[in-house]
Length: 345
Image 1 (cartoon, rainbow, N blue to C red):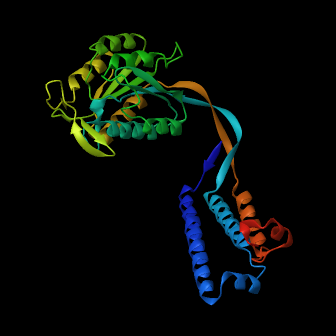
Image 2 (cartoon, one colour):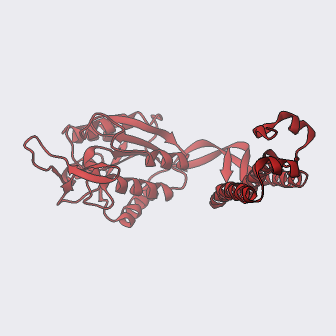
Image 3 (spheres, rainbow, N blue to C red):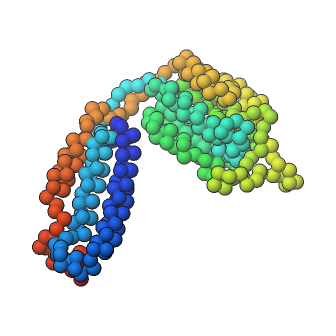
């Protein structure tokens, strides 16, 4: 497993295109200045061993040396030991609503982005719990199975959008049904499902399915995103609002937060409803709930004993810079025979 310690140094790679541009401009200026001094044939006679290829080669060597130095500064590390550790925690499945109504901007920046922020912050505050992610709209889709890899969880979360499911609508019941398959330990009692939604339920079966889930030991907590006042659903292209979604009568659709549905689902499954407008409050309540729950011991494999690898790239960079000292800009015998860039014409 790889780790990159100082990723900010990757910005230094921008030096390479700057050097390339400077090299091209310098060659154009040289050709223009030499053209004023003498014609091309005379210049070849005056400096027959001058090689453009050598100049390009030196540029490539310098670019590679800079790239190696940058990677050395980033300091990649490799996990050399895979060990099994005992951990205690709760299995938490996040069901995130990705229906079109989640594009409403009655809560900044919009409901879906707010949902992602909430889940990310909850994950950041976890210690040794396992997490899974479900995306749902008209149907439910398994986004990430139960895992202890929080980095992957946040990556999958950020890639979620309203176009990932072709079936539109909001079928919370299917999200709950799918979540049941995530908990593979029949003896496990600390099963948590967190539903993040605006509460619009087109199936009207969520409460019944939530009660069934409760009988299987799953506690459901719901987080409402949006406002009771509601807002229209923007239709955008390249970030620009072109119009708003309309119904069959041509009226602009206004989607509102349905707290009643979310509260009912939570009550049926021995959970709690939380309004998602205040991020800090959501994190505090979820953290407090998880802290009071019984923890289950499970095994997890993780890499340990990460070793620095910067020395390889630093050594290669020094070698390239040393090599550059011996790369003269005049032609060598074997390169002259190759006639690269048609230099002998």
